[in-house]
Image 1 (cartoon, rainbow, N blue to C red):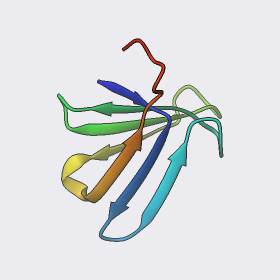
Image 2: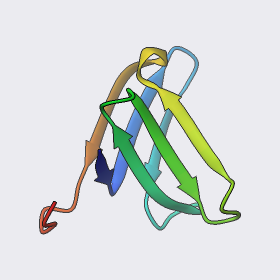
Image 3: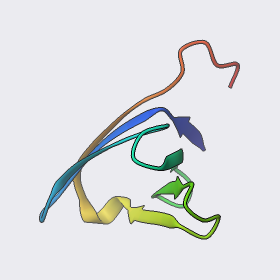
Image 4: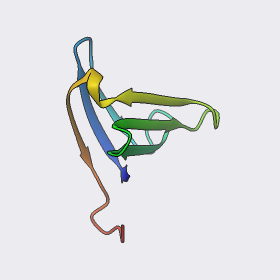
Length: 69
């Protein structure tokens, strides 16, 4: 499980960039075990976008380089 600061995602239908602290994005979690990406938005604690790895053609993420994780 990795917490990302910025995420670039490309699927067959669209390309999207998510960044923590912008456009209501509270957290980005790249879960390699379950093969999903979870994006939590701060409009509600139940607002969450889940993107399975199988639906993506490409993804790239940046983490905090000073993190202790």
